Every structure is written in structure tokens, then in C-alpha cells.
Image (cartoon, rainbow, N blue to C red; front, side, top):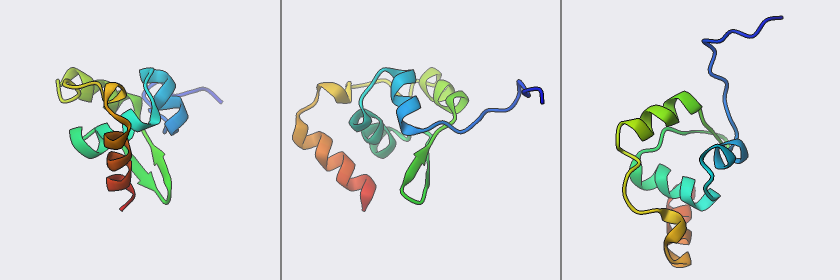
Length: 83
């Protein structure tokens, strides 16, 4: 079966962390505070890299690097997502 080059498969949190070279906390913060495109299916986050690339190009991703923030802010962003 040949792979359709127009098909954008769903990616996991781990794959997205590796793709962007950031922590899980950074991604959760971007979802909560910067409208990063992400989809929650049950308890699992899924991503499409084409949407993430567009989000980055649009400038919506610019700003503070969440990886450099204090742990207390990282934890509060994660709690906001899980509510």
C-alpha cells in the first residue's frame, strides 16, 4: 500500500516533544496559553505537524520560552489543561 503524501497523520505527545525539541510542560503551556493546535482524545493529546508548522509560521508561538519558566508556573499550566 502506498503512502498518500497529502495525508497528515496524528502524532503523539512524545513525537511532538521530539519534533519541537521541547518538554511536555512547554507543549501543555502553549496549548493553554498560546492556542497551539492540539486535540485531546480521552486522556491522550494528538497533534498534526502541518498545523503546528502553520501555528509557528503565523507568529502565535512567539514569546517566552516555557522551558525557562519557574516550575510553579509549569505546574499551574498543566493543572489548567487537566481541569
